[in-house]
Length: 588
Image (cartoon, rainbow, N blue to C red):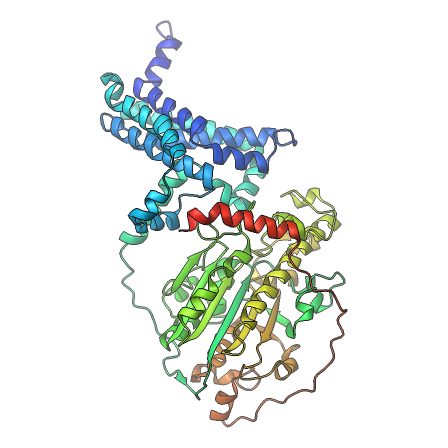
């Protein structure tokens, strides 16, 4: 111990190259992460009582950047790699700061598809100045001015020791705010996407993996191979299915809830099915299961991954299928068909604190008109009521029920505050579904139009001391498995809404979706014979099977209270227009 010198130990630990990496890290965090810092300070205002969590997050992202650069920068190659990181991060930082874009796989695709005219249109003197000062100059200095001895390779032992210390500091940084981090990781994907350059590098690796990965050798098992088209129609079908997120049956006023959470849908001629159970209690199970032919009892992720689903069968029978997603992803359902990610401002033009479900309707007219000579199936996967921060699931203009819970720790809120926040998100879903219906009505004279809304699972809001979802199915409370399902039919569809009403109290489940979709498109298969005794089958299919036609009920006057149709409030419309202007460059 007599020969131990703390300064000497520090000099050995912080070698010239490690100090250089730390210098680059701090440069990136101070000058190229304005968008990240801006989002974090909006989520956790410095004077809002969460300054500790804010500082912890800023430190955490700094440590992540340093750790990543330590892993990829070694020896003489570090000169060129760090210079490239500085240059590319300056570009990314400018466009994230100016236009709010993120560098994800969608943006990388856009970048590669950008022609010369579009590229020139993205140039500006501000961009040139920003990139020159914060990217070109430091990169030039690293390449031609930095001392040569800074790029001597460190020993693996010393690099491993430094990485180990970094990990310890990261754990120490996170531990006091573990609950806050859990909420941040679960709720604020959009904010994390602005971490520069770590998320950009992650996107590049993901993008490369998607295009270079070798497909699994196991063949895809075909299902319902005997499917046949029955009958002929002068009009093509246009069906939009909305896959809801974390929606409870009992929070829809269509189903008797005492708060008016469906003011717009109550003005439409819809049927709300009141006895529908989910396949699972999480999105990862319910979404692939509901489109699978397996059913809940036989479903497994491994089986489903190597089997066709309902959308595959539709596509094989010349039906144009499009999946638009404002949630995590399709959970493997849309792997073999057109898929568009609307969680990114690069695609979704209606983004404020997060990207809104209604943004998925943008551009659908163009898609429908481009496929006018075919039947069309469009799936819209909502963000819906994803918790626990329900108050973030809707624009401020839809905050009708107050006070609301504004914490990710639901146990810190009153039951009234939790309920109000959740119900406001249902109110926004009502608005979104009504907008879907308005879009379909434009094609009522040319297509057989329909909208089907089915939630993936429910949510516990404090009942039995439980919150959120994903409880084991065998012990899951009904709040997590009893889901809403709503149907609207256009005037040209094969059967009238009055013929559907007898089934509104019938016990249905996600297991019924596969055959419901096939029969809606006049497709017959022995796979679905067991369902025809009660399922709302297409008239042509019923005639083929020699079944009696469905009865037509007399028109029943609506008993719901008359409500003036709620348009999007002026401030919402203004926010949507401003968001569209900000995102227009990113969407090209």
